[in-house]
Amino acid sequence: MPVYNKLIRDLIPQVIEVTGKEFRTRILDEEEYKKELIIKLKEESEEYFAAPSPKESLEELADMLEVIRALAVVHGANMGRA
Image (cartoon, rainbow, N blue to C red):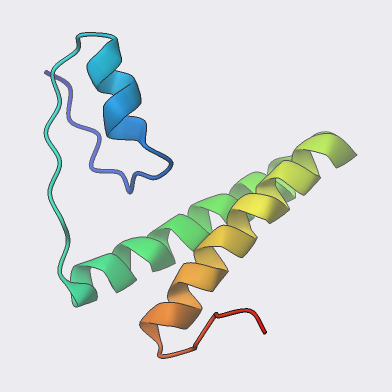
């Protein structure tokens, strides 16, 4: 079984399960989660700078916003909407 060591979202385990593939997940502690979010933000920013089109740039910016929101919560922000 390949090892990816990636953050997951959007019901990805259920999607993989439907395909019949094997997988393992674990919940990270807060420090691990913060570390992985920082790594993910760096990856997404590199993908943004390498994006060849405005459409792909917007997709990468959307990914970056999602990671930034998660990091803000880790740092204590209340992301509730009024």
